[in-house]
Length: 251
Image 1 (tube, one colour):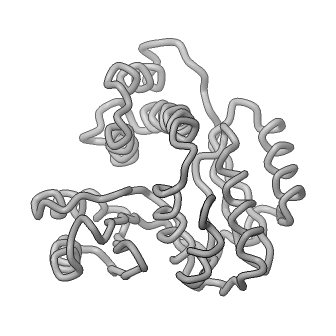
Image 2 (cartoon, rainbow, N blue to C red; image 1 turned 60 degrees about the vertical axis):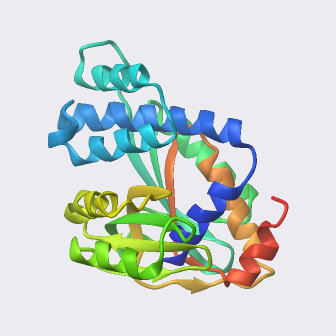
């Protein structure tokens, strides 16, 4: 759990904003195109597409970019067909990682992802080696400066959330996949803004990470996320808040 919410919060504070925004555009265009190809071009009837479109709006992606990506997915415009591939492996300290990629060249992506695992102290494993630890769920992160705990708890749980966890600087709302949109709607009705709202994979148990191992774990995840084909990296690490602050200070 902590591996998702804490890392999500840290990423919002990190620098390199322009480069990160450019990568986010590219990744979301792939996701929108793929979601439209699989489930159709109407966000109202395609939850995966709706989530991707909402994420695009949250980072101010131009509407014409979104529409073009949808049309490429539905075949109204020519475009690349991306294959969805999941890679599994481990970071320092036995932290389990799942890497979801959308690629037009699986062999190239496999080689690039394996290289990053090897270079930054991880090891890529075989299919199924860590997937059993993760469950598909929705995750909404609300910064503490956007609302108070009681308001978030009330809105989230009334709409069907499974859990609300309090981190150092944010509230993490875990939902069943089919309740993500309902929880977002309830938060919006309560005038509560969120930092991110995603379909994700959450581990049932976390692995404590020492201050010595934390920089290597986070660096591996960051470098995997910088690959163009990688959409998300899911992890089961738990790094203490004070350690996380020290490790990421000045990053």
